[in-house]
Image (cartoon, rainbow, N blue to C red; front, side, top):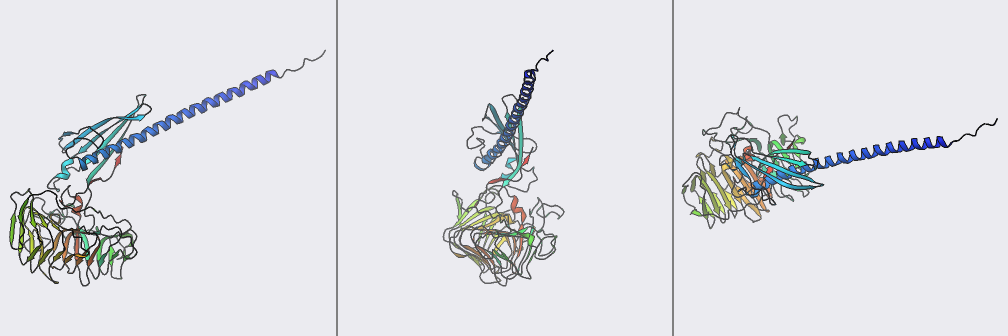
Length: 488
């Protein structure tokens, strides 16, 4: 008998079938994984588009706030009007923008709500009201009917015009000099609190102006000089600064007697309080374009009483204004437009009575006082010239220098306290303080600020200047900005 020969073709077929099955399973798994990866990526992409759509909603609301107070449309490219409602929390504007085509059959919309929007337009910025905010809810709808939603919310306010105790807006050059001594701290005013007196210090929103080195004071007085040219951006001399120095990396000149510290600083020269980001806004100053002249400033004794406590009057000095021992008294909201130099000497004064506001635009140089120790100057709310009287309020007095002259566009000799803000818009301007006043408020320049040799100014930065309503200062309009975005 002979054995039948073996046939290997069955094994080969079985092996081929097994390999084909394995490849098929692997390929199916790969296709399934690829599809799931595509679905995941698609969903992530649509989720990102949903967030971008919510960001668009925030931008649309900001545009409406900054450019379109009539609320006729949501944004520059939209014809969707806003709807006004008045819930108990405050006025609200709402709109929903639809019709976004996001590709692959995906559509989107964003619902925008601006709550308590008119708080920033109120005449009294200290009224206890709910903080205004923007809420944008974006919805992305998939072809399958599924949806993604993203909510972004953010409080908003006008950009701060005076974020620093003293600041220089010129990014190329300019310095702040304490050539001898000085003291700086910060406080928060809102002078009246409805009663004509300061509220107790226990209320964090109403703090009486301090005296130098005595409580209550805080450590938020920032001196900002962002000049990028080589050299010293700031010289502290023998000054005591309870706060910060800010530059863009240029050195801060300090001596063994310089003090820069916070409440927990171990040393008198705390280098952690020297910041490399000097936020100094640079907004142009402009005299109001359209106004009706209510009267002319003569240089003699004058009493300006507005016909209404809420209607601003415009008074003009067409050939400069010199007050030689004379006093101009203001009662109500007033804008003075000085076309030329402003000079106050021999006890020449401009005085604001209680519940008054004054903005002064000066196209020439400003000189307050003549010789050290002069008692000329500005009195804001107190007939005694004492800046920490209970009815003083720095936001009620603004002095603008729009001079294009080079050098000393502003010189202050007076021993009177100054309670207000100074804004020098000229790129060549130098502000000189030749005396040692108490300054309650803030100073802004575009070149140099000198506290000259032998002076010992006491500077108390008013943090309430950071929270003013829009268009509080008529000479400068700042845009609305978002403060902190919350995502959900």
